[in-house]
Image (cartoon, rainbow, N blue to C red; front, side):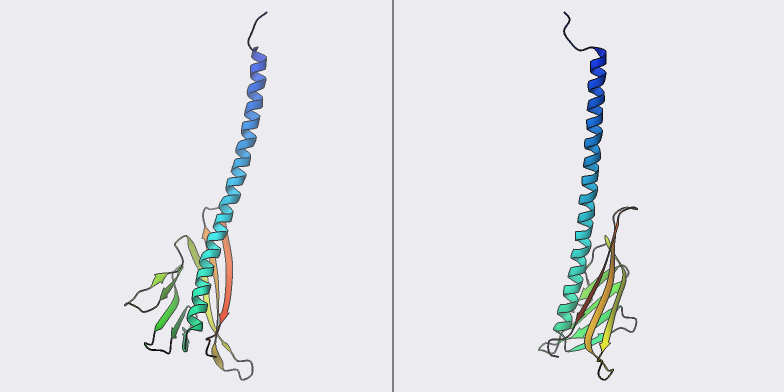
Length: 165
């Protein structure tokens, strides 16, 4: 009696191994794609949340609020000693913040990976008398493009008013 495998048995085992390897590679590819998508969503959400929190904080600490005519920039001034002026604005595809602690000290709140497709600040009117008040709303769209096929877009909206109102 001979020991070992016949050619037919080796071909069958090779075919089964190739089939299982192909299935495992497919599963790994899907899991990697889902994980990548989740990390993209987390990145956009994190950066949008940072811009929202910064907007809320500077508006709440303000005594005067000025919004650029095109709605791309808000400048606030605090009433204290010393008086502090802060600016939040869109520059290209980024949102920048300046707390005026040093000359032209703008800091990017968003990274290059996330593009701002729209950023609009609106001073809301009092519904009783139609006069613009110090309640301010901001709306922004953030887009993260990892690849040609993978894009995540999120819209954020925040409304805030100074604490003194």
